Image (cartoon, rainbow, N blue to C red; front, side):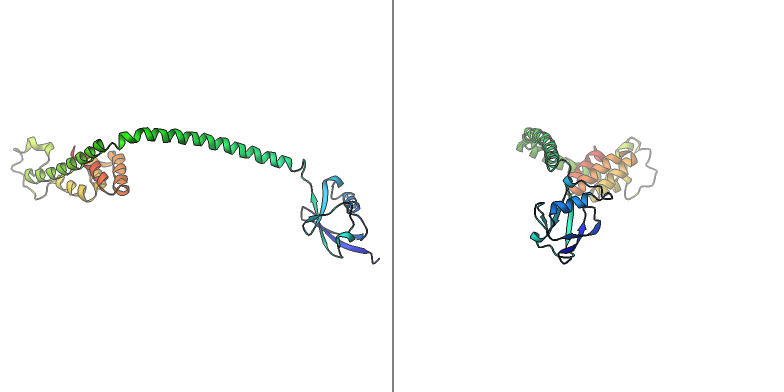
Length: 229
């Protein structure tokens, strides 16, 4: 009886059961006893035991592995088909990823080539500087010209043909268009919204993006071109 030990066997599905074996019993015989248990429904060829992280050789005994009373053995089941299906599946996934990556890389290369072709047209020094100077001078001239003409005339250009008929109407210090011009300098998107209303919401959004993201002047120029032109 002293040669018999009690062993805890924990299966791969986290179930634990207790078995008693002779120390001289081979691992293969233990596996056969386990496979004979109908409630486990296991085949001897598909299972193996591990102890302290090592796979136990079927031809060796418990005593050779220095397994003592109440030690825990782990019952593992081999993957059907071995490890090769996993390797093949991983290779298929890697291949699919590489194909997708190459297609994306090809698209990026095409876009990069197009950008290289466009850059000389956009950043041609002479043309680029001339466009900036024209935009700045035109917007400033239009803004201040509109302000002065609004103050001098007391009315907008749209009703200038009625100025002689409106002489009897009391004059105000600030014409309505002057306020819009002031808003244009202070907050270009607001001035554009007051001028175009809800129908010009798209232009207001574009102007807001240009003003906030590109530091005021592009938004100011955009609003001035729509309000004053």
